[in-house]
Image (cartoon, rainbow, N blue to C red):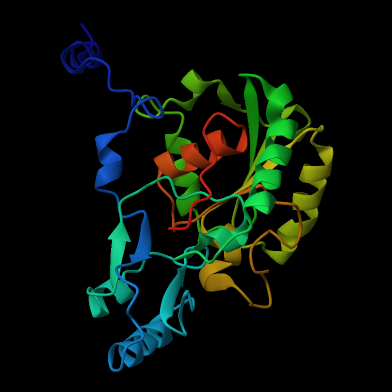
Amino acid sequence: MMPWVMRGLRDGIVTSRYPRRPDGYGLTFRAAVSIRRDDTTVVGTGRAVDAVAAACPTRAITSEVRQARVDRGKCILCGRCVAQRPEDFAFDPDTETAALRRDLLVVPGRNEDPAGLAELREELARRVRAFRRSIHVRHLDCGSDGTEEWEIAALTNPIYDIQRLGVFFTASPRHADLLLVTGAGAAGMLGPLRETYEAMPAPKVVVAVGSDAASGGLFAGTYATRGGIGDEIAVDVFIPGSPPSPFSIMHGILLAIGLLPIDTRAR
């Protein structure tokens, strides 16, 4: 008997039950950076946070009046802020980090307009209502460093098995409901990005995967890249991380197609 058959009989079902139930792996993954407390602007501590902000390679940290903030859309999870000021910054193990708007990736969040968020939720729900339970995804690399591609590829393995949720990858944008974009928006890929988006039938949704796609990451503002893809096409869901875990990507996809409650709370 083949060794893999015996291993399968020994291990049993290894496929995650997410999103039906939480997966233990998500509790240990360093998915995002959060602010530990709200008093980071007292004398001395404020200056320390300013120093941490200056050391951030993507300028993801800002020190405002009475509150420091982290822009997860820019954060590449290097951990410098946590190492320098563990009393102020910490890794957040919550892999459900996707957001409906780019500004919602900034934590702690500012006061939002509930009516505006409700309208945003309803507009997305209206568009994806026709998708039912069979979703076809077109992935486009728009100048990534390759890390997000590894995590996206993992979605089809036996652990995550995203096909069990009715989500399938397709090679043709004309067959796609959802466009999954990685990369900082390389100048040479902006034309193919727009052409791919225009070739998709309506209704369609777009998910930006990773900090590069959300903001440009380390590559923002260079001669060859844009600050993410949001200036080129309309993005419905932003997934932070460098790279985000397969669970984070799965959460963003399910959020985009209306199979999860939309979480707009300030973190």
